[in-house]
Length: 117
Image 1 (cartoon, rainbow, N blue to C red):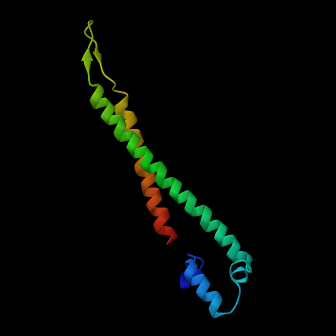
Image 2 (cartoon, rainbow, N blue to C red):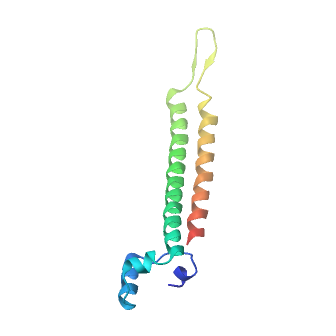
Image 3 (spheres, rainbow, N blue to C red):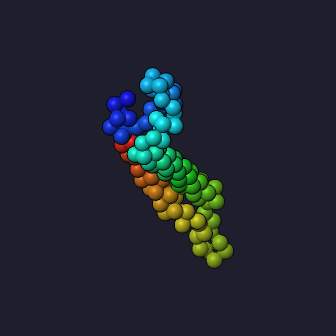
């Protein structure tokens, strides 16, 4: 309840119904009667979407980095008839780049997630 009063968090739906019943007011009046509460509901919803997309992006980047390293290993190295080494070395820095971006996104996700609570 104090988190709701201090604009840090919203109560769950059961709590809102219980409050409305206790004070004998409608849910519309309780939630939408105050414009700051409406703004907070919209803001919290969009913030959670951003946090979730950040998590999905981070996981995708990490998986892409791992796939880059796996491809480098699977393709392997060969020496052509002229004696030139042929290997997909470009996959290594790309893999590290994806892993780094994914880890930075993951840390950002954790910071935003715990900052919100």
